[in-house]
Image: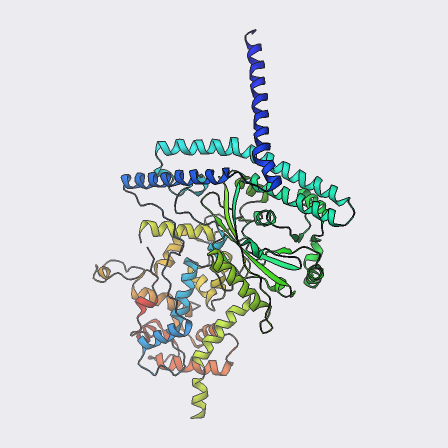
Length: 453
Length: 173
């Protein structure tokens, strides 16, 4: 028993020393650069090493599958069925052409017309453009996370060991580190903004507020090990403008706000989020709405307009898609923010899913589960492009303007620009009516001729 | 159908199955935006559900989709005595016939035709015009004079239409 005692204190000493060392390292390598906005480049090296390992892992799986002579499940991004890009009119004309020898231009109804609708319908059941945007993107090569692996049975021993090592590193080393950083970041944000809030309004307050915000967001960025590349920073949003971006996850906010100083728009939540929101608004004016006010579109529009017209206030950050999309496409923008009449600064955000898919599938995971998943991925790698500002032209209405901005963002980010893509809820009937109108033109008209003759 | 195609369709089935109980209900189908805007969407959804049931499992899902398998050349000369494959020309035509024939009495009556026409054109055509279109179509197709279109008459009207191609969906891989 006596032998244990000195051993015990040795262990305790070792633990104490390692924790101190860890925290010093933390401070030096992560928090201090975050405060000043510089970077050591550690994350880039980390990213490159990981890429090499992933490529090796994929090769091994493919080799393993070939040896056992089984087909691999290969994810296909472009859809699983061949769809003809012909329009309603062309298809129906073709149907009639093959069916009867009658005059092609005479509009009339044929029993075979139904085939068009029938096939289109079944095609959308098998594979449609919209529902697949709401589940995470499938990867071509494996990134050593079991959550993205579809070929579980082909992993060799070496690969399993590597995967186990990865799990160890991610959960036992990276996760506590990240949680500590996140904790530091958030508490600094809350205390910092509250303290700054006590200062009298003026340049000093603004300066401090800006730097407190930036510093805390930078720490949060490191808490997620987000490796962000900013492009075209000269186009960054200015006061009195609206910043518009595509939405993949709540992390988008952190990513954009760590590089610029924005006023946020949103609903006041309870709990931790609410505390953060209330603290932030003390330091500089953000636009928070009560839950009841969110429904009142006029109120929302009025407050946003007031904010935008005050040139001393910060640019507003808005995500017009309204919901999180899986970052392979851009869905239809809600027109509300485009009706206000301010300059719009579009921003395109594209994540690289190889290191950790940032998409938040809110029907599958809650916020806390989502954050934990983010913190146990390898890293979040993304690119941010600042596009040149756009204003609404006199001859276009809000919807056309919104579509123009959407196309610009989709083009820059390499995302698919979906027309009229909609949320998970039921679709408006106007789209169905359009189809019906088109079809009616095809079968009517004949009777007008007939009644004349 | 190859192994990977089945896997892919199963993946699709599960992503549509929001309740995660292994079956699809009508709501699961209606949630697909592009299907909801198809004028015949509801009828097509009905085709998946067997008589009187509200849930379809993966097997039923595949069975209905099998109608749309392209016809391979080597299948045309197969054994004529065996059961007809689901994607034969006749079965494809039958699938479309069932979209018209709601009460499943093997005849498309004037009312059923009117109903389908109404679904396809919405409010853009008057009742009278639609009525005369329906009458004309039945007149041209009807051969036994019962003012309704039976399956045989349906087949005859469509004998020149390339059903195999129009009612087939090809996989990309």
